[in-house]
Structures are given as C-alpha cells and as structure tokens.
Image 1 (cartoon, rainbow over the protein chains, first blue to last red):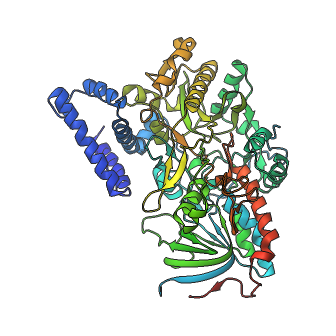
Image 2 (spheres, each protein chain N blue to C red):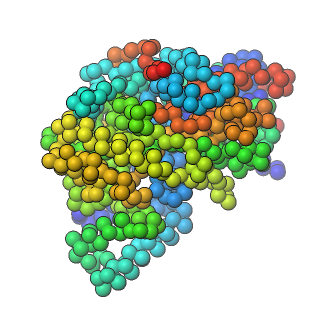
Image 3 (tube, one colour):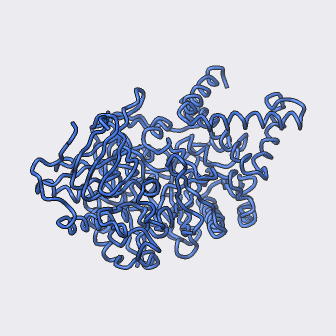
Amino acid sequence: MTEEGWRELESTVNAYLSTRPAKLRRQLHLFLRILDVLAILRFARRLHRVPLDVRSTFLHRIERAPVLLVRRGLWGVRTLAFMGYYTRPQVMREIGYRAPTVSHEPSSPRLRMVHGGAVKATP
Amino acid sequence: MSDVHRRRYDIAIVGSGAGGGTVAAELAPLIEDGRSVVVLEQGARLRDEEFTGREIEMAASLYEDGGAFLTADGTMTLAFGRAYGGSTVVYTGVSLLPPARVFTSWNVPGLSYADVAERAAKYVGQNNVNLLAREDINENNWLFVDGCERVGMHAEQFPLNLRGCRGSGLCNLGCPNGAKQGTNRVQLPMAERAGVEVVTRAEVLWIHERSLEVEVRPRPSDAKGNESEWPAGRHVVDADIIVLAGGSVGTSALLLRSPIARALPRAGRNFTCHPAQILVAEHPRDIRNDIGHPKSFYLDRSHEDGFVLETCMYFPFTTAKNMTGFGAEHSRFMHAFRRLQMILVLVCDKAVPSNRIAIDRAGRPVVHYTLTDDTVASLVEASRLASRIFFAAGASRVHAPAADPPAIERDQADMLDVLIDARNFIPGRVSLSAAHMMGGAAMGRDSTDSVTDAWGRVHGMPWLRIADSSLFPNSAEINPYLTVMSLADRVAEGVMQDLGTLTSPVIPSGARDLHP
C-alpha cells in the first residue's frame, strides 16, 4: 500500500475512534501493547519487526486464544483495519465493487407492482 | 428548573420506527378532534440528498452506535436504526408475517394470528408491498434459487415494500432513491400532514407517571440531518397516554432506568435476536451481485431445523468484517468481489433467562447474550446447507465462518459435515451479528410472566403502552417489521378505545407549551 493509502487508512480509523468512548480507546491501546509484549516474549522483537508470514501465523493463534478478551481484542483490531482499508475508493475499485453513483434524480418507477396477497401466511 | 421546557400533549409516542410510526399514523385522525399527539425520536431527520450510500458515514448517521453496538461480552454486533423512521430506514423492506404456529407458541391470551394477519393486510397495501419482477432480480438471488432447487429445496420470494426501486443495493445504508416504503416515507409524513408533531434528536431519559423527561440534542456541526424541531436542552413532556416504541433495546432500557421499573419484574427479559452470519462463495465468473435489490429470496427451515437462509449482498467493509480471519485467504475472497455470492444464515433462537437487556450505572443499555448449544447447532447446520447450496449453484469455493480454515474448496464439497463443525464456532473469533432485536417488554398474562397484555398495555399502568418488537414473547422466526406494524395497529386501537377514560377534556389549542 502506498504512503497515501496508509494516511487514508489512518485518517478513517482515527476519525472513527474519536467518536468512541475514551475507555475503548484505552483498551485498544492496551491490547496493542499486549500483542507487542507477547511478540517480544516469543520472537525477541516487537510485532511489526516480525517477518510477515511468521506474524500472520502468530496472529492466527491469537485468534483462537483461550481467553475471550484476547480474541475480542484481535477481532476489534482487524475490524478497524478493514474499516480503514475497504472503505477507500481505490480499494473498492480494485476489488470490483460497483459502488453505485447516487444521483438523487426523481425516481423512475420501472418495476411491475403486485399489490395485495403478498403476505406470507403459512398456518 | 428555569431552563426546562414543559409541554403537554394528550398522547406522546417514543420512537418513530415500524411501531411508533404506525401508532402515529393511526392516531393522527385524533388531531381533527382537538387532541394533540407528539412523536419523540432520538435520531435525526435526514434530507434526501444526504443518503450517499457510503458505508461509514451512513452507518454513523442511521444506526445506534454507528452500527457497532456490541453485546455485553463483545461477541455479537447488534444493528438497529436511530433516525426519523427508526430501523425501517435501514432494513431491506422484507414484509411478511411469521407462520401461525409462532403466535400459537407465544401463547398470549387475547392475541390471535387471524387478527394480526388481518391488520398486516392493511400495511401490505399502505406500504406498497409487492414481489419484484423477474427482470429486476439479480444473479446473486437467482443463484440461490437455482442452488436450492439442485439440493431439493424450494426458495420463496420475499414480498418487499418498494415503490420505484432502482436497484442501488444500498437498502441497509438507507435507500438513496426513496424507494423503500418505511415509516419515514409513509406513516410519519401521513401523521405530520394531519398535525402530529415529530421531534427529532429528542432522547427520552426517564418515564414518570404520565410524564417524560427529554433531552433535545443540538445538531453536531459535522453531522447529517436537520436541527431538532425543538430547542436544545431539557424538556418535560406531560401526556395522558405514553406509547413506547423505541425498539427492543431502547424501550427496555428506558423502562429499566425509570422509577416504574420496580413494578415491572419482567422488563428486559424474553430477549431474542436471530443471530446471523454471512456466508460468502466465489464463482468462477463475474456475477451481477451488488447491483439490484439484495434480498429477494429465502429458504424457510425454521420449523424443521430452527433457521432461515436469506439472500443478501453487503458492502466491502461489512463483508470483510463479517468474514472470519484475515490475511491472504481473506484478501483473496475480497478481491473476488464481483464473483461473490452471499447467503445470510439466520437462527431462530429461543428466549432463555440468561439472555436479557439490562442497564449500566449510567442507564445505558447492556445486552447480555450467550449462544445456547441449540443456537450453535442451528448455525452450524445452516452453514452446511448454505455451503451445499453455493456449490450446487456452481461456486468454486466457500467461506464458512464455522470451518477452520474458513475456505472450503469445491473438491471438499462432500466433506462439509466434517469441515463445518461446532468446535470451530469460537465466540470472539467468528463474526456474529443480529438485526432483529425482539423481547424485553413481552406480552403475556400478568406481571409475573410479562410486561404488557395482548394490547401492549403495561400491567398496572393503563397510561403506558408499548408498541414495538419488545412485545414479542419469543423469536418471530422471520423478519419482524410487518408483525411490529400489526401489533402497533392493535396498540393504537386500544389507545382509541381507552381515550375517554384516560385523557383530559379537549382544549382547542392543541399542544400547550407551558414554557416557550
């Protein structure tokens, strides 16, 4: 991802986090610190310095951790990462999402309307 | 108390969704008789041009907590609307009733399927419920129909409340074309034209006997929507009759944080929500999936297996979030977006004592929800069937959250029962969501088993009514909005009947603002 892409991602995540309670932001910060500590204990280096494939294996183990709080923490971090990444217009284009153009013209009915008798009634 | 605005109405309605909007429209004729009716809505009233279809900004504007409301243990997301029109702004317009056996199992004295069905027919007409024409149904939906037939099952078409659908596929982000006929398009404008007041950005904090404490919030500078119709600040609304329709979570929390909660031991109980998962499959070719109405067909296995499969198509971030895992495999599915078919697996959970709505110290709702073994078993069984349908429809690989790894290749299609298993269903690892919150102020016999009677009258408080999905004593086993409207219609009828005994004589000036 380009520098600009990272900036967009960070901007989206930061904007979202700014609307969340301070307690949640503190929990997130704490969880990221815990991930780093676990990486140091396991690999003798911080998580972002661990090779990508090893990091991925490590995080997949965290995903199945016996402690719910740890699993939840990772779920939250991945959700934020996806929010920052998959809402970028360039990424939406790349993956093939045909984001509709919203024009707000007066709507033109083109459907055949079937009135009545549409309620499901299965006794 | 000099900053408090005091207002008086004959009837105050809390919430403007399927329940509140319906009650407002039904009671609107009272305005001609000199009665006054107000609707208090916590969310904002958006202008047509503000519906952009962009995921984050629309979720922030239309959903409670921006669509990120989590259960107490953080393992399930609950999505419910907070806007002029409530959740009817963000649903897909599915309009059908549960089967009669559901009402029989609810066992509410005085409530019959026949009565609910008769009322539903009125809203089928009023909200233009129809079946999409074949040429307007996209390939994502037809693949589901085809897959169902190939596994020996029959998919049924959803009746939808659309008028002039242009196939944006953005129903869950608020229709940008105004095609979906929610209460924001039908009942609320009808009520307002008749003289009902609708006040947005108005959060009801507490209920006292025949009185509401309301906080009207100013419009944040960067937010969508109009300013509130009332000045920002604290208001007290006195009303002879109060109707709560803030949704299962909102109504329950309001009851629980109010002094009247002491007399309502069942408040917050009977909570169900149809826990759901999104299953995704990749086809070898592009399919028309994200253009067109997303939810046209369903497979009803509620009676036999405790689940319903529905077609669906979500937006990139929502899709990514709801898939299990991350990394290369996850990315591969996401980068095949044009080749993706989606099915929503929806379980008909049953009310159990441990699943309930409570409040925290600040009075905010907290939803305690744990999946029962039966619910997990149904999710797993539903995922297996959905995967069979995907492969039968020609998919090359399937992403099933309850498989480990989640990706299942076509040559593994005969091993689905082994690969998709309850042992992989680890809360906090798999994404779960729910959009059909039900219960919390259930109908029933008396205060030992319920909060209201069959007409939404709160036991022992004839001035207080409830008219939303919190009335459900148990799961509806299908999308609940038409049922909510029918029950709200009953509540409105009950209010009309009791009006003479519960309200003051008519004062011609209508609403009386005692402190302008």
